[in-house]
Image (cartoon, rainbow, N blue to C red):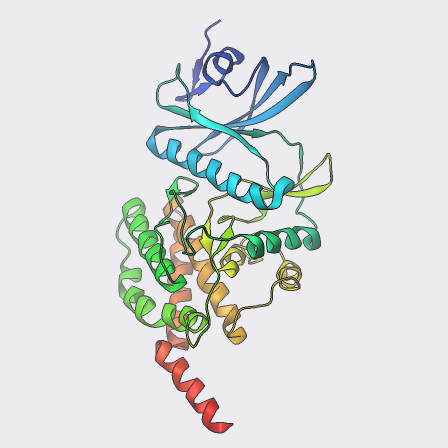
Length: 342
């Protein structure tokens, strides 16, 4: 039998391929398909170790240059998270390229049997908060040492000294990706300058002025209910498929909105029992809306035929422009007036 068989334009991976191409996995016994997405296939690989015991691994396979970079980013992200929170995320085993399959690449970690349920909020949020609070950016800046991917979308992870600068760079990058993937976006063209000049400074700059600062925290980067589950063996929460970088910790929660997934307001409350909301607290809901917008922009670029993603983004921008027409200067005026009143 051939070592590989092509199915729908991608390859089925066999034990023979693993034996010859993946030195990290010894004595592979079987390979089983474990699902697929638009940009990757996944497999369960059963092996026997030197002591005769069974071990199982999860392998994700992608193709092309973007596929290779995405899997490298997942490996580095998972390794960085695992170094802080241990078994809250699978320990990465290896990533690399197949020798016998042209332009195909793999990522490997331990295999887990996952329950189809949302993790219980208290332990889950405690561990997310621990990741955010204990992580330290090696250079003290926002960003990451390599590009990471949400699906097949490369993120803008270039380092920046302020969170505002990093967020603006990432927002512009996502606008460009949307135009590249989905064509002209006139509604965004009409509002983006007000977004850059008014809304983003108004919501992010107060956190980094008057002696205040934002700590660059390591975030998962795509933490929603589809990337979190419960390990059936331990009944403990597990997060996976990260697209990490160092960010404002609350950025992580932008993907937790109930309309986006199964995380309810209970998860926000559980998280903030460990890490308080950032000053100014009265901006919290609008900051969260701003961060959620970034995730909707990613969805719009990945699925350009779904027009509702673009519409939700521009509708939210228009709401924030109407609420903060004076931008950061309006916040300064508010602070000055409060000082005079006291």
